[in-house]
Amino acid sequence: MPSFNNQVYNIALLDIEGTTTPVDFVYKTLFPFARNHVETFLREHPAAPEVSAILENLYGENAGDLRNGSAAPKISFADDLPSVVAYVHWLIDIDRKSTPLKSLQGMIWQAGYQSGELQSELFADVPAAFARWQEQGIAIAIFSSGSILAQKLLFAHTAAGDLTSYIEDYFDTNVGAKKEAESYRRIAAELQRSAAEILFISDVTAELDAAEAAGMQTCLSLRPGNAEQPPSRHSSIHTFTELFS
Image (cartoon, one colour):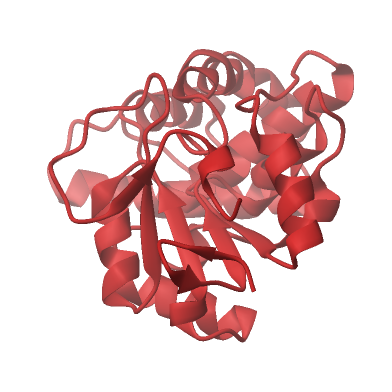
């Protein structure tokens, strides 16, 4: 059974941003693309049930922001397009881990991938690592604040081809926040694995702390462009070639 740091694992649970994918691709490509296309997308899909559900959830989130005295632009009513767009722009600009925002972004990115305007970017070692881990019997799962749709699109549209066949499962903020231990307990339960058999890899120590509290093993991703993290006891890697080899 493959091991890392003398621990045996059945599954690698991976963050995306700063772990499989450069931070700059998220902030300089994906976020601006969604920001620039949100108004057009909403105008072109006014009657789609999933869009209506997102708008209602955004309206509720906006009402909560206003009650809390935040500087959020006010949505006049759920289908008031200019005020919705202004609020979505505000959420993107502050990098809110908002579930309806992430769902909306995923739909916008889907259109971009399908049109060929978008192609995802991965660190060079990722495709080969996925293939090697599959041969070694290590399952791969993803946990990201981006929607499950966005996660699948990212791994389906890479320069190395469609990598989704390597991935067993995907988790987003519907399972819980990434800095809460309960989220990782739920993931282990859904994967039907003991938490101790799962290695969670992320570029954020607060997320690793939460996973460790849930019983998972952890590893800090030190990729180019990642934000500096406070000192911690977590193991660290610079590339996936350091794992299970």
